[in-house]
Image 1 (tube, rainbow, N blue to C red):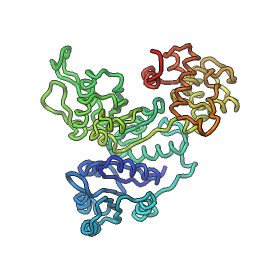
Image 2: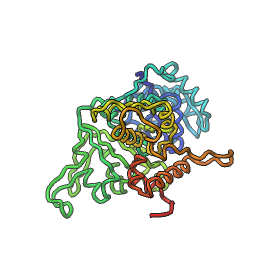
Image 3: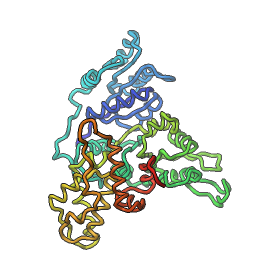
Image 4: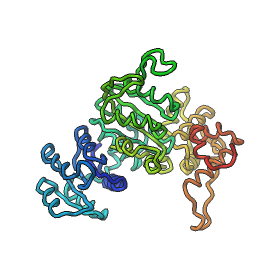
Length: 443
């Protein structure tokens, strides 16, 4: 699989950084992001970068100093400068230092694209041929365009320890992607430690992550290492990172910045070398705006961003996934694989899958257990055969969230209001179901 060029984006403005990231991804580039010069230099030390796009006016160390640093330490690295405060003297100076392009905000997408193309030229790789894309990549199934982009990004991470943030709906396979990143890396023989931050009470999470010494709190009868120490030299995957308390967020920020952690009750920090991958099905950027998640930590975690598509957004992969799960579970049970007639597969493909791949996996598993030979329409769950109500006119169009809520209501009706059973049918846990039912009537 071809590796696409990577670009380091440096801008202290949150919205501009996200806009640049989306544009670079759309152009087929792999973006790294930093909201200050110090973090940008750290990324340069850990990652292969083919282009730097930097703002000039930033608090603290400015973009001009970054351009000077690049001219001294990375003289062959192309630089594109952007600024909202054009100054002729600055423009002349950055060009003398080696900047190849100078864009003044606001600029159009086309102007940005043209500037990047002028710098990278033929190195910008357009969409790869289908034949070059595997159906299975480190256990991940799919060949849809979003999955091809995901595989390319994972490939770009193999020789660096830059932090990764994986976002996507529940059931899209965030932990599987984290494992793929780890086992596709140079450090694949080192430990991979997965932690569900949402499953550990707030008062215990800090101790679990950083460890504690004897006597640090009631019940601490001996020294105990935390997950950071267990993952030393390898990868620590923090799922549901949005659930971390402010105190844990502060310690995580220090651990990333200093590469040192301090056990609860200890005074001496320990050096750790850990590749941190985080995941969330919440909108962390919205949490930053609401003040419930630290902005500086968000940018530290979000150097590389991977957005996993919902299953309804890659329906062409559903037959591949059905075939994979069918063969896997049939082999485990010592049975011949089931046959899925075209009519059945059309129904499965047309379903909206609010529980995503996990829901599909659960359904195929049940079918393999309960059925022999051919799957019939009556074997499919009742809610799957119900079509979502079609809008009568453009004025009746509804949001995807409302369609999802309507579907969850139908599943609850089909299960007699049993939330545990409904969550199982949907392929999500009860906590996620409760979140999706917020605002609904009933307990």
